[in-house]
Length: 268
Image (cartoon, rainbow, N blue to C red; front, side, top):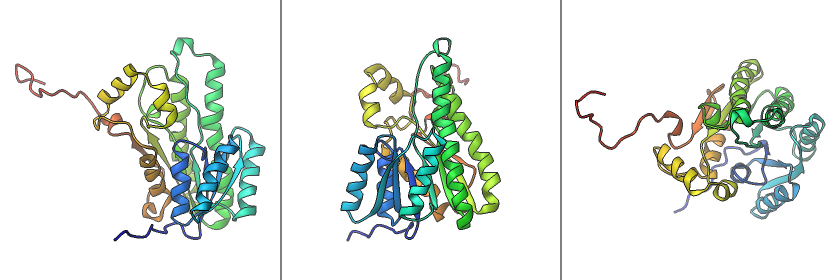
Protein backbone atom coordinates (compact mmCIF):
# COMPACT_ATOMS: atom_id res chain seq x y z
CA UNK A 1 0.00 0.00 0.00
CA UNK A 2 1.43 3.38 -1.01
CA UNK A 3 1.85 5.80 1.85
CA UNK A 4 0.57 9.35 1.61
CA UNK A 5 3.12 12.09 0.98
CA UNK A 6 4.23 13.54 4.32
CA UNK A 7 2.92 17.04 5.05
CA UNK A 8 5.94 18.46 6.86
CA UNK A 9 5.33 21.93 5.42
CA UNK A 10 1.58 22.24 5.91
CA UNK A 11 0.76 25.87 6.67
CA UNK A 12 4.21 27.03 5.56
CA UNK A 13 5.14 29.44 2.78
CA UNK A 14 8.30 28.99 0.71
CA UNK A 15 10.18 30.92 -1.95
CA UNK A 16 12.36 29.04 -4.43
CA UNK A 17 14.63 31.04 -6.73
CA UNK A 18 15.69 29.50 -10.01
CA UNK A 19 12.51 27.44 -9.80
CA UNK A 20 11.92 27.14 -13.54
CA UNK A 21 14.61 24.58 -14.30
CA UNK A 22 17.20 22.16 -12.95
CA UNK A 23 17.23 21.56 -9.20
CA UNK A 24 14.63 24.29 -8.71
CA UNK A 25 11.90 22.13 -10.24
CA UNK A 26 12.00 19.26 -7.71
CA UNK A 27 12.58 21.78 -4.92
CA UNK A 28 9.36 23.64 -5.67
CA UNK A 29 7.39 20.52 -6.57
CA UNK A 30 8.28 18.62 -3.43
CA UNK A 31 7.73 21.56 -1.10
CA UNK A 32 4.25 21.95 -2.58
CA UNK A 33 3.58 18.21 -2.37
CA UNK A 34 4.45 18.34 1.33
CA UNK A 35 1.98 21.13 1.98
CA UNK A 36 3.80 24.42 1.44
CA UNK A 37 2.46 27.33 -0.59
CA UNK A 38 5.33 28.04 -2.96
CA UNK A 39 6.45 31.13 -4.86
CA UNK A 40 8.44 30.08 -7.90
CA UNK A 41 10.82 32.93 -8.71
CA UNK A 42 12.92 32.90 -11.84
CA UNK A 43 14.47 35.24 -14.37
CA UNK A 44 12.67 33.12 -16.98
CA UNK A 45 9.05 33.74 -16.02
CA UNK A 46 7.65 31.40 -18.66
CA UNK A 47 9.65 28.48 -17.26
CA UNK A 48 8.51 29.24 -13.71
CA UNK A 49 4.90 29.54 -14.85
CA UNK A 50 5.07 26.11 -16.51
CA UNK A 51 6.30 24.43 -13.33
CA UNK A 52 3.75 26.42 -11.32
CA UNK A 53 0.92 25.23 -13.58
CA UNK A 54 1.97 21.61 -13.05
CA UNK A 55 1.96 22.08 -9.28
CA UNK A 56 -1.47 23.71 -9.27
CA UNK A 57 -2.85 21.01 -11.59
CA UNK A 58 -1.71 18.45 -9.04
CA UNK A 59 -3.59 20.20 -6.24
CA UNK A 60 -0.75 22.28 -4.83
CA UNK A 61 -0.61 25.98 -4.03
CA UNK A 62 1.88 27.94 -6.10
CA UNK A 63 2.46 31.24 -7.86
CA UNK A 64 5.20 32.37 -10.23
CA UNK A 65 7.03 35.68 -10.40
CA UNK A 66 9.95 37.07 -12.35
CA UNK A 67 13.05 38.13 -10.44
CA UNK A 68 16.60 39.10 -11.22
CA UNK A 69 18.26 38.31 -7.89
CA UNK A 70 21.05 40.81 -8.62
CA UNK A 71 18.61 43.73 -8.45
CA UNK A 72 17.58 44.77 -4.90
CA UNK A 73 14.29 46.30 -6.02
CA UNK A 74 13.27 43.09 -7.78
CA UNK A 75 14.17 41.01 -4.74
CA UNK A 76 12.03 43.25 -2.56
CA UNK A 77 9.22 42.92 -5.12
CA UNK A 78 9.56 39.14 -4.93
CA UNK A 79 9.08 39.04 -1.15
CA UNK A 80 6.23 41.55 -1.43
CA UNK A 81 4.58 39.30 -4.04
CA UNK A 82 4.94 36.36 -1.65
CA UNK A 83 3.36 38.30 1.22
CA UNK A 84 0.44 39.38 -0.96
CA UNK A 85 -0.28 35.91 -2.33
CA UNK A 86 0.39 33.62 0.61
CA UNK A 87 1.91 35.60 3.47
CA UNK A 88 5.54 36.04 4.53
CA UNK A 89 7.88 33.17 3.73
CA UNK A 90 8.93 30.66 6.37
CA UNK A 91 11.39 29.03 3.95
CA UNK A 92 13.84 30.61 1.50
CA UNK A 93 15.58 28.38 -1.05
CA UNK A 94 18.41 30.36 -2.67
CA UNK A 95 18.84 28.05 -5.63
CA UNK A 96 19.35 30.56 -8.47
CA UNK A 97 22.88 30.94 -9.76
CA UNK A 98 25.15 30.82 -12.79
CA UNK A 99 28.33 28.94 -13.65
CA UNK A 100 31.51 29.62 -15.52
CA UNK A 101 34.81 27.95 -16.32
CA UNK A 102 37.97 29.54 -17.66
CA UNK A 103 41.67 29.37 -16.87
CA UNK A 104 42.63 31.86 -14.16
CA UNK A 105 45.05 33.75 -16.43
CA UNK A 106 42.30 34.15 -19.03
CA UNK A 107 39.47 35.13 -16.66
CA UNK A 108 38.43 38.75 -17.20
CA UNK A 109 37.36 40.92 -14.30
CA UNK A 110 33.89 41.13 -15.83
CA UNK A 111 33.45 37.37 -15.38
CA UNK A 112 34.40 37.55 -11.72
CA UNK A 113 32.06 40.48 -11.16
CA UNK A 114 29.16 38.74 -12.90
CA UNK A 115 29.54 35.53 -10.88
CA UNK A 116 29.93 37.38 -7.60
CA UNK A 117 26.96 39.61 -8.40
CA UNK A 118 24.63 36.71 -9.19
CA UNK A 119 25.78 33.91 -6.91
CA UNK A 120 27.04 35.77 -3.85
CA UNK A 121 25.29 39.15 -3.88
CA UNK A 122 22.08 37.61 -5.18
CA UNK A 123 22.05 35.07 -2.37
CA UNK A 124 22.78 37.82 0.14
CA UNK A 125 19.91 39.99 -1.09
CA UNK A 126 17.34 37.19 -1.16
CA UNK A 127 18.36 35.81 2.22
CA UNK A 128 18.30 39.24 3.85
CA UNK A 129 14.89 40.15 2.42
CA UNK A 130 13.40 36.83 3.50
CA UNK A 131 15.05 36.95 6.92
CA UNK A 132 13.44 40.29 7.70
CA UNK A 133 10.02 38.71 7.21
CA UNK A 134 11.04 35.56 9.11
CA UNK A 135 12.14 37.64 12.10
CA UNK A 136 8.59 38.95 12.30
CA UNK A 137 7.27 35.38 12.17
CA UNK A 138 9.54 34.30 14.99
CA UNK A 139 11.64 31.95 12.88
CA UNK A 140 12.28 30.31 9.57
CA UNK A 141 14.80 28.39 7.49
CA UNK A 142 17.12 29.58 4.75
CA UNK A 143 18.95 27.15 2.48
CA UNK A 144 21.72 28.56 0.31
CA UNK A 145 23.27 26.76 -2.64
CA UNK A 146 27.05 26.54 -2.81
CA UNK A 147 28.95 23.95 -4.86
CA UNK A 148 31.73 21.40 -4.67
CA UNK A 149 33.78 24.22 -6.22
CA UNK A 150 33.34 26.11 -2.96
CA UNK A 151 35.13 23.27 -1.18
CA UNK A 152 37.78 22.15 -3.68
CA UNK A 153 40.16 23.77 -6.13
CA UNK A 154 38.69 22.55 -9.42
CA UNK A 155 40.59 23.74 -12.49
CA UNK A 156 39.32 26.77 -14.35
CA UNK A 157 36.94 27.93 -11.65
CA UNK A 158 38.63 30.79 -9.82
CA UNK A 159 35.70 33.17 -10.29
CA UNK A 160 33.00 30.56 -9.73
CA UNK A 161 34.77 29.14 -6.67
CA UNK A 162 35.14 32.63 -5.20
CA UNK A 163 31.37 33.10 -5.40
CA UNK A 164 30.52 29.66 -4.03
CA UNK A 165 33.14 29.74 -1.24
CA UNK A 166 31.74 33.11 -0.26
CA UNK A 167 28.30 31.55 0.14
CA UNK A 168 29.70 29.01 2.61
CA UNK A 169 31.34 31.71 4.73
CA UNK A 170 28.29 33.93 4.54
CA UNK A 171 26.04 31.02 5.55
CA UNK A 172 28.01 30.54 8.76
CA UNK A 173 27.79 34.19 9.75
CA UNK A 174 24.12 34.42 8.81
CA UNK A 175 23.44 31.40 11.03
CA UNK A 176 25.14 33.12 13.97
CA UNK A 177 23.47 36.51 13.44
CA UNK A 178 19.99 35.10 12.83
CA UNK A 179 19.88 32.41 15.53
CA UNK A 180 18.42 34.88 18.03
CA UNK A 181 15.47 35.33 15.65
CA UNK A 182 14.82 31.60 15.42
CA UNK A 183 16.11 31.47 11.85
CA UNK A 184 18.30 28.57 10.77
CA UNK A 185 20.68 28.98 7.81
CA UNK A 186 22.40 26.11 6.03
CA UNK A 187 23.87 25.39 2.63
CA UNK A 188 23.96 22.56 0.14
CA UNK A 189 27.05 21.98 -2.00
CA UNK A 190 26.05 19.87 -5.00
CA UNK A 191 28.51 17.91 -7.08
CA UNK A 192 27.88 17.47 -10.76
CA UNK A 193 24.16 17.00 -11.39
CA UNK A 194 22.41 15.51 -14.41
CA UNK A 195 20.44 18.59 -15.37
CA UNK A 196 19.62 19.13 -19.06
CA UNK A 197 22.32 21.82 -19.28
CA UNK A 198 25.01 19.55 -17.84
CA UNK A 199 23.97 16.59 -20.00
CA UNK A 200 24.27 18.78 -23.09
CA UNK A 201 27.53 20.53 -22.18
CA UNK A 202 29.67 17.67 -20.83
CA UNK A 203 31.67 16.01 -23.58
CA UNK A 204 32.97 12.44 -23.36
CA UNK A 205 36.30 13.47 -21.82
CA UNK A 206 34.70 15.52 -19.08
CA UNK A 207 32.07 12.86 -18.38
CA UNK A 208 34.74 10.16 -18.07
CA UNK A 209 36.82 12.33 -15.73
CA UNK A 210 33.82 12.95 -13.49
CA UNK A 211 32.84 9.31 -13.29
CA UNK A 212 36.40 8.33 -12.33
CA UNK A 213 36.56 11.02 -9.63
CA UNK A 214 33.19 10.25 -7.98
CA UNK A 215 33.27 7.20 -5.68
CA UNK A 216 29.62 6.46 -6.49
CA UNK A 217 30.57 6.62 -10.21
CA UNK A 218 27.52 8.53 -11.40
CA UNK A 219 26.11 12.03 -11.66
CA UNK A 220 23.62 13.19 -9.07
CA UNK A 221 19.97 13.66 -9.96
CA UNK A 222 18.18 16.98 -9.31
CA UNK A 223 15.71 15.34 -6.93
CA UNK A 224 18.60 14.03 -4.80
CA UNK A 225 19.99 17.52 -4.29
CA UNK A 226 16.50 18.83 -3.59
CA UNK A 227 15.96 16.14 -0.94
CA UNK A 228 18.96 17.35 1.07
CA UNK A 229 17.85 20.98 0.84
CA UNK A 230 14.32 20.09 1.89
CA UNK A 231 15.66 18.17 4.89
CA UNK A 232 17.57 21.28 5.97
CA UNK A 233 14.42 23.39 5.64
CA UNK A 234 12.32 20.94 7.67
CA UNK A 235 11.86 20.48 11.40
CA UNK A 236 13.85 17.25 11.05
CA UNK A 237 16.87 19.58 10.98
CA UNK A 238 15.65 21.76 13.85
CA UNK A 239 19.05 21.70 15.60
CA UNK A 240 21.16 22.11 12.44
CA UNK A 241 22.42 25.54 11.46
CA UNK A 242 25.49 27.03 9.83
CA UNK A 243 26.35 23.80 8.04
CA UNK A 244 27.24 23.01 4.46
CA UNK A 245 26.27 19.55 3.27
CA UNK A 246 28.04 18.21 0.19
CA UNK A 247 25.68 16.16 -1.95
CA UNK A 248 28.16 14.85 -4.46
CA UNK A 249 28.45 11.07 -4.43
CA UNK A 250 31.61 11.34 -2.31
CA UNK A 251 33.52 13.58 -4.73
CA UNK A 252 34.79 16.08 -2.16
CA UNK A 253 35.96 13.43 0.34
CA UNK A 254 37.72 11.07 -2.06
CA UNK A 255 41.47 10.62 -1.98
CA UNK A 256 43.61 8.21 -3.95
CA UNK A 257 41.54 5.28 -5.18
CA UNK A 258 43.20 2.19 -6.70
CA UNK A 259 42.03 -1.37 -7.18
CA UNK A 260 45.28 -2.97 -5.97
CA UNK A 261 45.46 -1.60 -2.42
CA UNK A 262 48.93 -2.92 -1.48
CA UNK A 263 52.10 -1.37 -2.83
CA UNK A 264 54.72 -3.87 -4.01
CA UNK A 265 56.91 -3.32 -0.95
CA UNK A 266 53.97 -3.18 1.48
CA UNK A 267 54.36 0.57 2.09
CA UNK A 268 51.75 3.24 1.53
